Structure formats: C-alpha cells, structure tokens
Length: 193
Image (cartoon, rainbow, N blue to C red):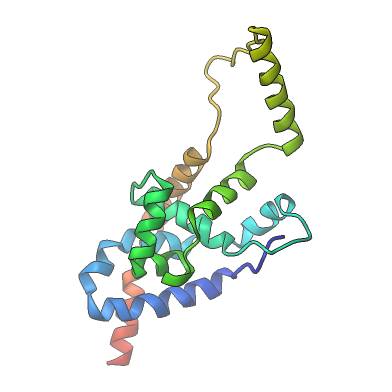
C-alpha cells in the first residue's frame, strides 16, 4: 500500500525551513550543495505517484517516504555515490543531506527500503520474473539454454541510466532558468534583517 505522498509545495517549504538555519550557521556548506539543492527544489515528484500506485497493493502496511527515496537516488547520483549501503550511512551521519531529500536524521529510509523501491519500480511483473527463473533453473539442469541475441545497437535501459538522465534534464532546466536555491535563502535573510 502506498503511504502518504508529500506534495511538492510542502516539500519545498520543508526544504527552505530546514536549510535556512544551516545557511545562517555555515553558508559555505550550503553553497557547496547549491546545485543539488536547486535540482531537488525544482524536481516535482507529484507526477510520479500515479505511476507508482499500481506497483503497491491496496492492503497491508503503507510504504513510507517513497518520494523521499526517489529524491535520495537523484541526490546519490548527483553526488557520485554508487553504493546504496554507503549512501544510507552517509545520510544517517549528515542532517543536511537528510533535509535535502526531505526527512529528518531519525527517519532516514534504510537500505532495504531503497532496494524495495527499486524492485517495485524497475523489475517486471512477478509472474513473468518467476517464469524466467524457472526457465533458467531448467536450463541449468539440461546443460543447455536457449540464447536470445539482443538486436545490435539496442541497450537495455537500467535504473541508474534513468536517474542520470533525470539529472541531465534538471541541469538543462537550471541552466535555462538561471535558478539558484541559495538566492531564495539570501532573499529570506535580507527580508529578516
């Protein structure tokens, strides 16, 4: 069951309210992550909810933090981290990174939650997957397997390629709009002064 999905506008307010105190205390640290913050600020995941809903049952315990996990993957790609285990450890140790994906330090999605999200979003229908596994088991027993050659020039799309493509798209949007998240924080500080 798909749990509460935080709307994008609510996430943007959370991000500003969480990052502003850090900006006031350590401006250079926030500026270091300015590009990633800008990307996450404009990345509207409200359109992802209807896409994900069919992958969750209508009964059982609701899945938590699904948009936050997707943001986690985008940030992970942006910062060049390739190990989910190391990434979750880094998130748990850094409250700024937690705020960037939209969670508190005590509510970081575990490694298993990240892999469950990948499995639901990226893997095929469970019946098809089981049929393929059974086929492979039979092939091992008979010592021969039918090999299907992939057409030349056709590459199979994977999750990380998709996340990287999203980052490239966000780079282009930022470049076209000249948007910078730090400028929002500077405006808020100037208004308060």
